Length: 278
Image (cartoon, rainbow, N blue to C red; front, side, top):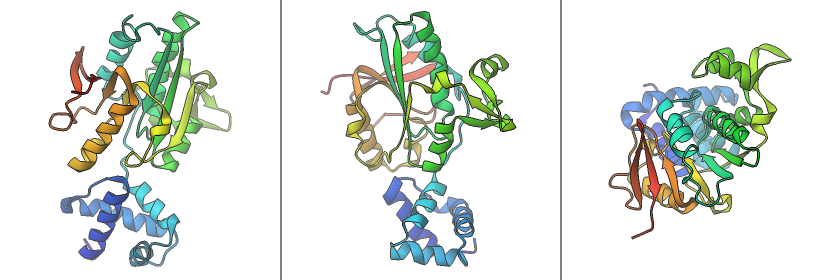
């Protein structure tokens, strides 16, 4: 590590305060790498110049670039396939899932990154819709990073990206070659038609988003401190319709963080169902 520890301490604290992501000291090498990359991308003389700009608090572009670089955007189509199998068979395939309203599903892909999770859900919901034409759905895709949201909104993916999780049949059915670049695949318009994209910081107020039958918020809480975890979970609870579901990452749990969800084991997947507050 070549940058002063005091500098990295300040930037780590700024990141945690702004978006909740924690950098332990043993991961400062990752933080240092990202700080250097941001300073180069912004055309600054050196990382120290970036630090001084952040400390002065007047350069919103520098702050946004650092927060963007701090996020982990690792994702793929149908990542952890058991979650999607359960969504398709145990939820969409269950006539009791929506109660009396069996024709409309609203899903939120929170911290949706570059969109692979949301488009995986769209493929399943589109198939569900085609089985009965009166069915409808909406998928909200949010992320703090406008950079990754742009890719999600555009629905454009490289050869490497589409071959991470998609079968050849899914690729041919749901994507088309980009007319301007033979190495890029674009999601078909009919899959984007019922999707909305918004920049959202999960530590800030999102009450205007409405309520959802299912919220996918995977591999987000793992980077937060306990206080922020509880805050986000409480807000997620309020955004889920009665009897709706929350989906977390495989390494995440609500144990010790919330009491108003019941564990539902759907096939090999774990879903958390909203119950009335005690």
